[in-house]
Image (tube, rainbow, N blue to C red; front, side, top):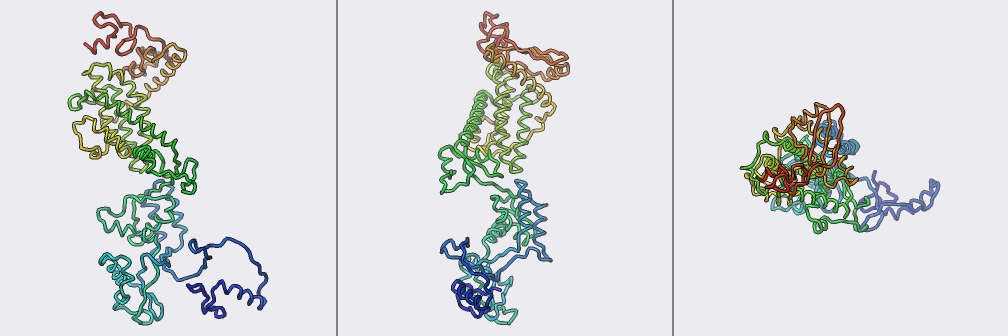
Length: 570
């Protein structure tokens, strides 16, 4: 029952008020109730009531005929099929999106497709002018679609084309009349966007169907995500996407939604002008986009510091390849020092982490893996212990060339790994990398893959023991610095006592412990209990490598130099 017409007047279903606007009829209805004795109480109250946002007038709710997609039709249970697809056929990033979409589909009513608005995609249905029976026919729908495409008129064609051109040859299935009128309803705009899998993917074969991913905000589980899935299941019995990625929203530093009224909007273009596109991309990669994130000037300043660390580390590495030609000087893996082999194992692990992060759309994990690698693995350890070898070892000697080979391989893999995020920095650095297989751009390189030869887990396990020792030695060195016994760690020598099996393991590695601990001398001996003694180094300081050695100044030909530097120079 809907006794109110589109103009807000009562219909013949209530003959005593027929033709009256509902607002005018209210007082008449109250009086009639009084006269009939059916009015128990009457008063006026103030309460919230929905209004038209443009005209500011109160709304009238009417029950009207609409077009629906039934969710639980027995011969095609759309809800059930959609829920099965969500459970079995779609990857969700983050995973909680699965439960959210399931809940939306489980609780959604039949989908109302029709809207009563002036402009939009018309519903290609015609009504008999005699009995109002709808004429729904696939051939007629195709005629409407063809008229849209003809002369690229689009939806205007529906209004310009005479009705009989669409309905020619058809009669009413109820009364037999051949006179029809066009539907005045339009499709729900969510249906318009939801069927882009047909309008776009199915018409452009280069895109493919289903799509690799659909990406939108968390509010779209009720909107585009759901309507795309339902329309595709209904049409093709499969989802329109393989993966569904949900992102959060960007808030200000206090967690408030950005708005002009608050004056807290930070525009991406303003960030680019001040910090550059690299910093904006790096910040985006830094954040877990699956959650709402906060943005602030302080955050961009911190990200800028991270960027500088990347840049300075790459500059150091490139600078130490100035006299290195990979085609001439590269050292084979089996001739490298053990610490260099270990560094390639770490690079292999990084490649695996980043490939996995990219495959799973966990881009923030790739950022944090890169940042940890540059900060901890390279800057704080590997590149730090290489400095003596790079600066003071024999130029053409195996130890130095081994180090340069690994630095080259690190850059050749790190730059492409970074390129999707730090595009400008990677491209700029790649121009300075003397690669015999150089491409015109870093973006023409394949994405790095782990190398089987570098996958030496046993070596890493041995090195983890050494790194524990290094951490203990570093604590002892710091104690000597605090009490002013030493300044630089090169002013110290270390005596280490460890169990026999560990001595043998370290000796098998043939690792340079002085290089590893950055001290002037290390003595390793077996014992039942682990013990580390750090004291001031004996001898004098070499003016070239700054290591302390008892043989400094023993050569009249090479005054002020240690034996290692004399060998390097001679």
